Length: 231
Ligand SMILES: [Zn+2]
Image (cartoon, rainbow, N blue to C red; front, side, top):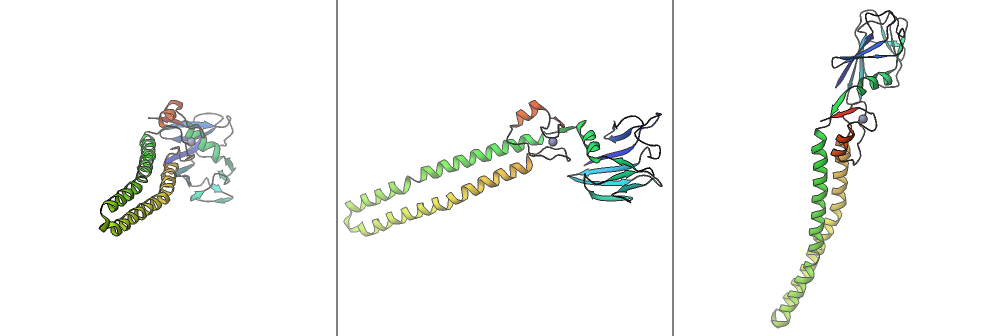
């Protein structure tokens, strides 16, 4: 969750917009672009997993969303028209969220385990597939053995032929069931990876692709929103 305090730059003749988060402040726009009827702490914007909400922090300098003044509004969209104060300073949400998040470094430490688990799961699938392939030779061997025994023990011939047939049938069934499970499981593994291996910036959350964790740490930034990554 990221909280941004939006207001007017203090202590200057020609104020800009100030955006404060995590104890640091960035200024947006040219000097003098914000009028004095925007308060120093005018409103608070909270970003929580792509959900943006806004809260007016003033008593009588209104905050407007799409034309109507509100004390608090959740689930606002980045395209909504947000205006501050009687002179209706237009707040460009996209610029502000970008300005705030671009300065922030996001830890991607947790993504190492996500990437390693994905690689391990993929490897396990390959091993399983290899075992299934090895298994496919088995029914033939067992059938031949049964038939061999049947030749030497004529009295057991009928039973051995049935045993051979049952072996063949059982293995065909096992292979059939597993063959349909393997692609399903592979898809599950990939879907879960796509869900978790994402940029930690709540305003981005873009899937980081199949780029190994080490590569991400080398580049140290999100290729989509340019947020900095740290360990
Ligand atoms: Zn990003």
